[in-house]
Image 1: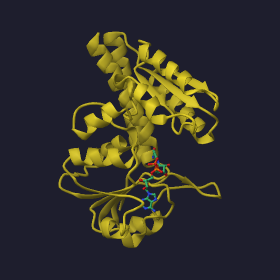
Image 2 (image 1 turned 90 degrees about the horizontal axis):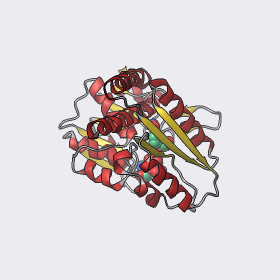
Image 3 (image 1 turned 180 degrees about the horizontal axis):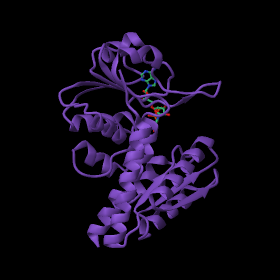
Image 4 (image 1 turned 180 degrees about the vertical axis):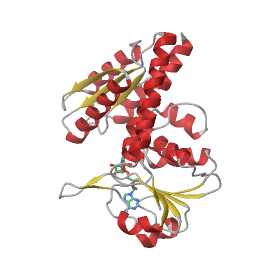
Length: 284
Ligand code: NAD
């Protein structure tokens, strides 16, 4: 069994991005810029945004955070995004989710200029991903694909079971895998016999939010298991969706939580923002 070290790989990607920023600056006089919009007081969202801002600083990005109160109107968020769309120093715009219930999230995501949509949530980029065209793909599944590359795990022709079918994790994960010629099964809360699907897969990728959902008897010997879940237990521990201690001995490769997919997400956000800035350089 080999552990996939997302923390170490994320460090490598961040260093690559830092060097990319230096090059872009010296050759084109462009500094990549990321704008983050944070609405409300959700502690997890605040923690994520803080980590993103710190990561931006480390690689040499220009970054700004627009903090807005829980009670802000939809029109005011739209106006801020439109301002960022027009700001020539901003290459990437990210709206931290979830938004408060009175805000129409779909409408907000559709206001972002697709060329600055570094989270890859705009329907334009979702469509480009579905048709295997260049664009922005969501950071978490993109990070998983990068893990496969780095560890020499070839997905072509493999049976891959994706557990969880959300717009930000499961669905784009399935699209990326399909584009890489894997045979993909997507499962979700209404799937009748989850174990029947996971136990015949060469690769199982789980992003659900249920601690211990994936047990040893649901995984075949020699499988690759990627755990995207992040769950905080009552005792404060952070765990994934996989019963790690029981499942790990059966696997060829497995990701830990924490230290697996989590750090890759921010690294890929930096990578997507650098890509957007390079596109700006090409347009100049
Ligand atoms: P979500 O609630 O939007 O979607 C959950 C999905 O899991 C749904 O498709 C649902 O049908 C499915 N599901 C729920 N219970 C199930 C069950 N018992 N069996 C099978 N499928 C089931 O959640 P999300 O935003 O996609 O996040 C999923 C998990 O991934 C969470 O733990 C979240 O914290 C984590 N996450 C991690 C990262 C990261 O950077 N590593 C990024 C995003 C989300």
